[in-house]
Length: 71
Image (cartoon, rainbow, N blue to C red; front, side, top):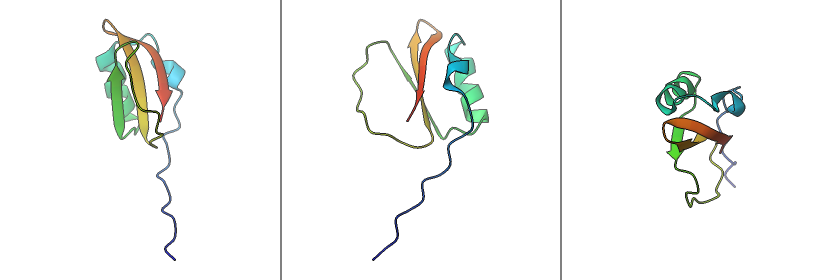
């Protein structure tokens, strides 16, 4: 039987620190801190709920991050 793959470690980062930042600056900061996938979404966007390690999500209103979560 094959062993289960070990998911990559997530960056040690606080999602709350991105709230209030300009979306472009937040994306650059997230990539610099090691997030492999950065996703910006408009408020109320319909998304799937699968968890992906290494992904950070931003809800962006105008040009500002209003909410942030991992997975």
